[in-house]
Image (cartoon, rainbow, N blue to C red; front, side, top):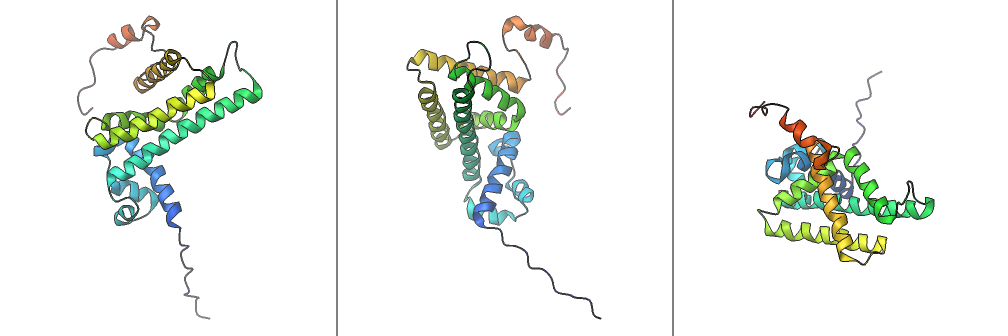
Length: 203
């Protein structure tokens, strides 16, 4: 009996699913390589598509970068909303915790668990210096977070909101540097200076 030579047709993946998968892969690659240092071919390879297909969905690498950055900020916004919903449902998880502190604790947990999200934020801020359009987009995303925190926390004092985001950026830098406690009194300055010479370039 002759072997059955029929092949099972490949399932066609909808463009919307491919687009979503490309953005997910882009988050990782842009987080580590930035806009200029990331190759679209590497993102395409992760998803199993050809590079021209990527450009059929995202006309330029910049468009794909912005889609990844937007997703990153969207996830931070969702995290804030979920943190407040959990706080309102279950109450404070530690003494004197309020909605804003609940947001902060959730954010710190997320950037520790998912460094890509933190690193992509840093890459987005860095890209602002070379591209006014990216600057406008990133600034709008950040403004939406500020407005969201105002709504979720019910706090109307601008200085308190400023303080929250200043601490958030302080935490971002600390996490990027691998410093658990960024306060000067914690000793990280002295221990870093005592580590010896820096690694040579290319090490």
